[in-house]
Length: 112
Length: 115
Image 1 (cartoon, one colour):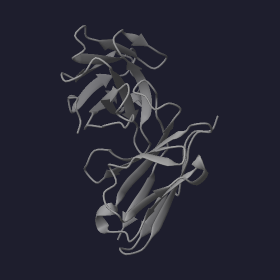
Image 2 (cartoon, each protein chain N blue to C red):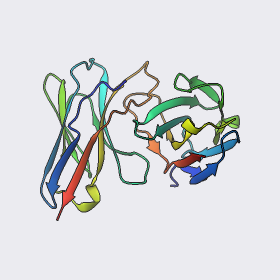
Image 3 (tube, each protein chain N blue to C red):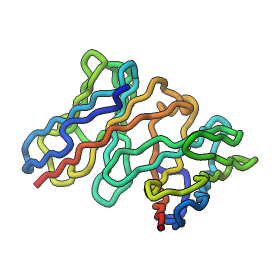
Image 4 (cartoon, chains in turn yellow, green):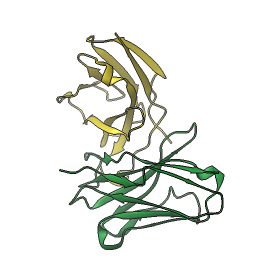
């Protein structure tokens, strides 16, 4: 069962930054925070992941709260192609077999 | 580098028939996962292979589902006999490591419709 909570939907305008929040209040010290997204009619796609420190890659940034009970995925300039369902997932470093537990995610709508 | 591929992309069968889905992981990835999304529900884990061995099959719904990965390369998921509630999208994913720090790469999915 999903251990994270996210808003059902969010809207953004194209070329504006988007901050997608996630709460993971039951996270343990060795759980990683992963973000995946699913575009229409495609399989989930990896976006970013982190443990404690903030992370940046070419797709997005991940800001992790100091107590690690929440995180925010940041898309710096949303495009129409970023319209997707975004999933925040807690993944144990070991022992969990790395199976991903998907929740309902956040449906991001991007408008011109 | 080729990504995860799945075949077929769509399958429509009648209740009681058999269907076999295939997944080819990224070359060199020892870990292979099956997930599925049934109508209106969340994506759910089915099982995990490490090479040819089943590491975790806790998500398999019942014994009508049989997954194999002979030789530790591609995998098949057979549903026999198919029931209406098996309709949904079946995703395959692969990864190099079995760790919460690793990334899973997903295929495009197979849409199964059972009539």
